[in-house]
Length: 184
Image (cartoon, rainbow, N blue to C red; front, side, top):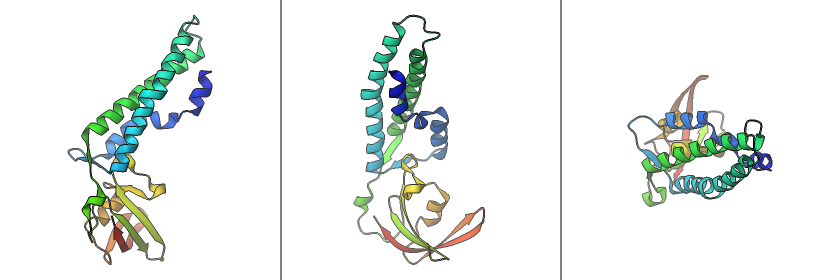
């Protein structure tokens, strides 16, 4: 019963290493900027874990504990492990939301410079176009074109304008990107 529930859960996002890695990405002494959509996603995840997943798991663990010997009770052992993972993730989300500073890019209006929340279309030397949105650390997803404002690419783009060129230092060498458009 419990194993099927846990198999459906996204356990990979709840490991301690992920929490530590995410918290290390935010430079010390800087604000945790986040878009309204990113904040909403954190809140939705917190609500789901705290109000839906955790209470169901507590019932299952209580049932498993009532069956007797806990040392060989897989439902109990695995349930307790999953509860620890959920509690760890809940603490992490609450801390991140406490220090979050929501910045709405839509309120920026018409702006030609690249700042937090901008969606930027760039073109490299080979003519390959890419679109990136500069977002908060907690909502970054490179495969979806969402890059953290502290990422090297975002830092290279910040404060530039349409028509400017950004110079990005990569392990394979220096890459030059032409900025084709900037929107908010």
